[in-house]
Length: 262
Image (cartoon, rainbow, N blue to C red; front, side, top):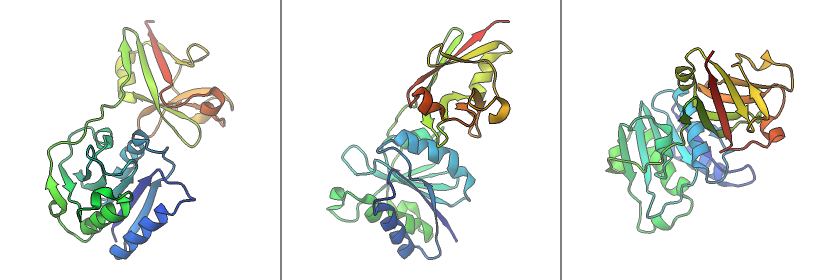
C-alpha cells in the first residue's frame, strides 16, 4: 500500500478535496491518502512550503505529495513532478519548491498536457495531478510524464537580517495554537550567541524575552516565552494563551534579537 498526501488551501465546504480523493481512489488500487493540511491561506505558497518541508520526510520513501495551492496553469508556471530524497512532489512551478528544498532537487519533469485544451483547465488537481500521481503510484517512470527541465522558478526565502549585534527575523507561520514561528533557526541563533546575553523583542520593546525555554510550561500560564520547535525554528508562544491573536502578530511581523556582551 502506497501513500499519497495532499496539501491544499481548500476549506471543508467545497467539493474539491472530495473530488480529488475520489479520483485518486479510482486510479490507485489500495492507496492510502493522507491529509497534510487544508488550512493554508488562499494562494499562500510560503505556508504550503513550510508544511510540506517539515512533514514529508516522516513518510515512507516512495510517497507522493500533491500540493494544491496556487496551482492553475499559466504561461509563467508549468505543472511539474519533482523527485528528491526518495519522494515525489506534484504541483505548480510557482516558487514553492525552492522554499521546500535547501538544495537543487534530483529530478524535475514538466508534465506534458494531455490535450490541447489542458491549458484552459482550472482544476488541474483532477485532470493533471491525479493522473500523474497514479502513473507514479503504479510504478511508471516520471520521465514518461513529460520533459526533463534543469531548473525551477526561484523564490528566494525571506532570511533574517543581521546588523552588528542585532538579528531581525520575520514571522513566517502562525500555528493552530496562535504561536508565531520565526525564520531564525536554532543553529543560526546559537552561532551568533557565542555565550552572550540576549533579548528577544516582541512588538518593538513592549515584550522582552531573555531566555530560551525547553517546555511551554517553563513559564506561568499567560506568560510569553521563546522556544525552538521540532522544526528547529524560533517560536514565540504564550503558555496556554493565544499570543498572535492577543498581540496582533501576523506573518511578516518583525522579531528582533539583541545580543549583549557580558
